[in-house]
Length: 113
Image: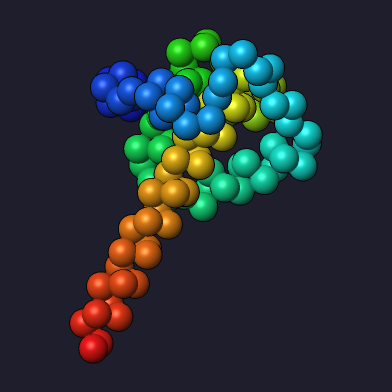
């Protein structure tokens, strides 16, 4: 189910357009930054974001565990290049979420006046 949905999404457009410059080495993530990335992923709560992250994990043949309540993987085992891709996807959805919240707040304020 998730695999077929994930192949329909184009993750490369997110991390190619936003932050990654192929001439620069990937950012090196500390343990603390990895924990923060996990927290940011949990805070997104957008299924498409999770699907795109899974697509990266799945495409690069990293180990993951599929259970009834979700898919689990060890972030510490992922190379920094993959973490950069995941980080860029999270940034994209954080910005999208913030834009939606701002638009909703603006509409609410306009309706009050």
